[in-house]
Length: 216
Image (tube, rainbow, N blue to C red; front, top):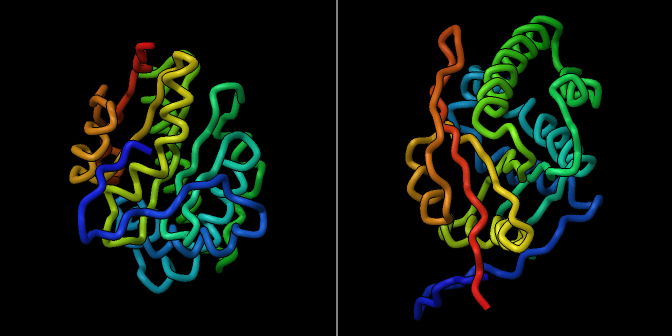
């Protein structure tokens, strides 16, 4: 997995594709790891509501990725990478029909969260169409709950990056956390554009990664 071995530092364990029985545990990992990320704060501003809703939200995201992509986690489930694969023609409408808007909470919260969710997804989809119009791997969510966040995160995305390189396929992602830009740049991504979710939403950076030509 191209990890640097540092004496005295525990290395991330091996990465595997997730199994159906892991949905609940992986959604809990993502809920904790991303609890205070700008996009979650925007979607669900109230902390108590966020704690209640976000595990379900990530369960649905995992199901979406299982249908139209691939999911990777570590043996100890301290991180999760949700990818959408290039061969599937998924859209916001198709995601909504999987149930992602049926938030299990009171009606007022459902309406408010659903509106913000659709506004966020519409803005991201518009940017993705402009910046990555051709087929690509899409890193939908990456969350790590580990003191070795960068090493574990790198291990989680490496399997798809390697496949993308071997098939000449580009990759695409958005991040709402400016501090993560350096991590993604270290893995070959570059900033292709930036934007802000309208109506007081958070800023985001769109990043693309061209396939690397491997010698030999």
